Length: 189
Image (cartoon, rainbow, N blue to C red):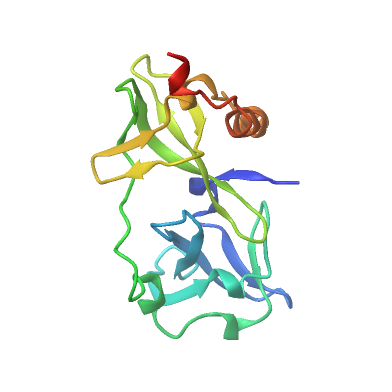
């Protein structure tokens, strides 16, 4: 079963070892710009005056991502510096999508991104976006098929507008609806 979480809910989660040692907290989530998969977390220290740890936690070193914490086997799961959070040799740098407009390919404005929705599991990835519409409603939009992400706009298939949810509880149905939608044949027009 896939569990969906807002990326904002993952930020600030404590990072703990299987032995129960508190070794930091999630500062930022770094996504692979080409696949939407979580690549790693950057970390901060715990406590009021703690700053960044300048260390990264690669996803492959995460033992579990739960509702209350990110769990690792031990402190050796952390990278010694935060350079792992940067793009690899064959990748381009990612784009911060907060505040970016979501538009269908035909030009319908769906809203502006306020958060990403992450499908957790063995290979967590962006499954959609929380947007605020022109009417100031918060809506969860699933993403499937070819999307284009830039610093100014996210272009999604037109069918995305018909598959949305008002809460994470209904988001799974919206994802399935978008995934299993009938394919439109342009020759029928």
